[in-house]
Image (cartoon, rainbow, N blue to C red; front, top):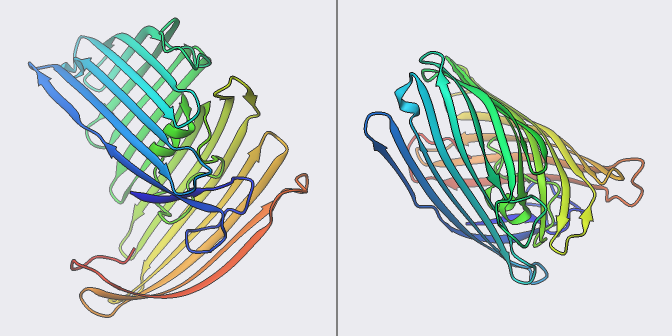
Length: 362
């Protein structure tokens, strides 16, 4: 796939890929993701996966990266009663054209107990590569975690765990709730990662697939950090309206370059909202809005705001005419005199021809 990422996080960041701002650059990604999942007997599950991602930038100023991840898990969760156990392994490696390789591993053994057919408690212990050991992937640091998981059919799935890793105490949480007219999801995790891995695995916002999904990362940077991210997503499907909302807060701490030098913390917080209205048999109106605050090292702060309105009119079974208005603004904080200010207003008229029937224009 080819997508656009920031060329310089200190420069202008456009609200979408359409404006010719010079703030984005092309990144080509080629990946393979084989996975093997097998049931062993009545209660044991084996799950192994490998992902290889090649990242190539169109701009020669930025070094390319190769990211590999291997995971293996064995557990007896399907028994849904009595004692539970699990074995897990996770290995990650990022290679650059010029900078040194970053590699880490972790291995865990877990024991637990089903309190009921829905609730499971667990505790695990193991070893991992110290987060700041960039040149040696040996698992020398002890880690542990304890928590509970709850599942109620297809409606509710929740998990909460606390622990201690090489970078300090940790907490992770996940809640998925499906109801009659929609769904809600809340996630929080704290993980060590690199710019290469984060860029390769980070998906475009579901509510704004054409928008920027990261306001911090500079391309080709051989940087590792601890990513702490909280996300809340809501989707509602009503008779004539589709409503979506997404809130996120992300901190990047303990930032290290490949040569071992440290960098200041970063932070980005934001909210995205969408409203779709089926105004008639042929007409659909969609609104998207966002507000994102970004902070570099406590001294470089900016706010990004924007909204877009699309009026889609279906001309035929496969053809659609779309009139759009898109406004975006980048405003530096009063304490950031060197920050870039930016504003764009775009009006567009698009004619699209689809290949299937009944598809809504995107």
